[in-house]
Length: 137
View 1 (tube, rainbow, N blue to C red):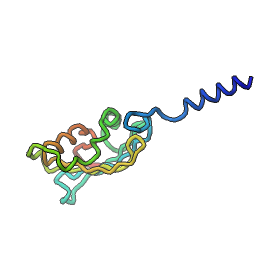
View 2 (cartoon, one colour):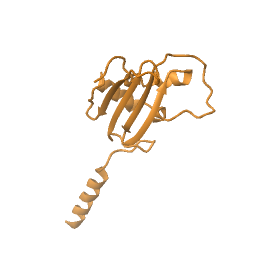
View 3 (tube, rainbow, N blue to C red):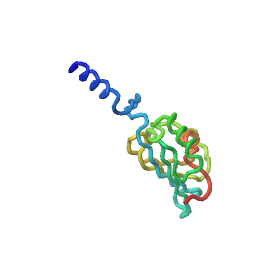
View 4 (cartoon, rainbow, N blue to C red):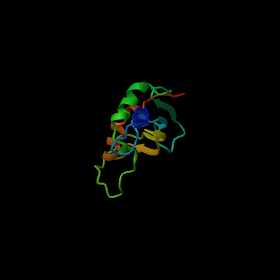
């Protein structure tokens, strides 16, 4: 009887917690973000602010379910600054800029996005559902 209890306890303990992903984050861990978008760049006083929560999807951002799905499959390194020696095409994708703060898969993040060169445009496009146009609440 004691052996059965010990085995049951081990099985319950093994099932506790989330599954780890290769990046060390927990799948199903909390994602709660505040996204501030500056349509004419950070120097302009006009901005839109959106909120996004996942599990369950919600917040003020349009299409929260799709945004959460995009985040789930996104490489978390997209939220890290590019190395200083990264070579990018010199092209202008528009004046838009955005700040993203909060928790992504249980880890704190604070990232800035813009569209001032090819690398930054690619980062923006890979997370485009986080940056909806229009007014926010």
